[in-house]
Structures are given as structure tokens and as C-alpha cells.
Amino acid sequence: MRSLPALLVSAFILTPLLAQNGTAVLAGRVTDPAGLGVAHAQVQATQRSTGAVRTTLSTLEGFYRFDLLPPGDYSIRITVSGFKTVQDDNVHLQVAQSSEFNTTLVLGSTTESVQVEATVSPLLEDNTTIEYEVTSQPDEEKTLSNTAHYTW
Image 1 (cartoon, rainbow, N blue to C red):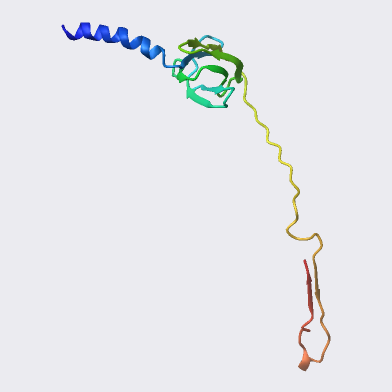
Image 2: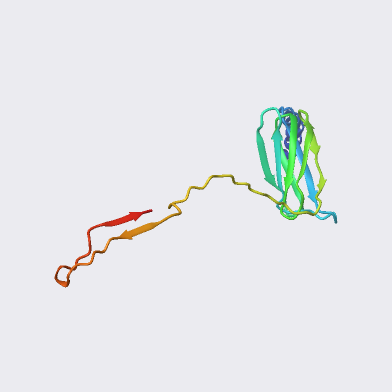
């Protein structure tokens, strides 16, 4: 029984201290057009002033959470296969604030194109010439001339 009052007093003292740690929380839910949670969506929070990036995946019910984020302006990017990417560059977090960023994804496909530009040099030149010089000699002296020309 003595531990219960001590626990309550500790909770009242520690809660304000934890809230004053100089950070913020960003949490939310990623849903599909039917309102169902989207599992394993990649949620990326980029602090715009520093470029620092934090990444997490949504739960099976579509929930995600970033704790201990430094206050400031953030870009939030959410991607998952089968849906169009969502990006919001205007999320502002304040000290000791818990912000919510919920989004409904739109069906679509993610497409990427890679354009490669290069000059390719042929391994061999286009013209190949092989020359043999055969001279006619009597049977006793029939030999292949030592003259052979190869051009690649």
C-alpha cells in the first residue's frame, strides 16, 4: 500500500520533467481509400533545416510514431507499393508538442525510369581481313609461305 502513493507522487513529478525534454512527437495513421490501415508503409520525416532523416514503417493497422524529434519544420514522405507517394513539406513541430499527421493513400503505381547515356566503343573494328599467300611449287617443295596478314 505504501508503494502506491509513492508511485503516484513520482508520476506527478516525473511527467512534467519528461514533457520538458526539448523534443516533439509526430504520430499518425496511413489508410487506404476504404479507410483500412496500410501495413508496412515507409514513413520518412526529414528535418528541413538540417536534412536529418528518420524513417519508420507503419504497423499492421497503419499506425506510425516518431518520438524525440527536434522541434522545427519537417517534410513527411509516405511510400508503399501499389499507392501513389504522399509528401507534405509543411509540417511544423514545437517543443513538447505531440502532432498528428494522418493520410489516406491514393491507388496508383510507382514507376521509375532510368536513362543511361554512354558512348560504346566496339571491341573489334568492323572490317576484318585475313590474307594468305600460297605459292605454287613442285611437289617436293610444297610449303605454305610464311606470309600471313591478319587485320582486326
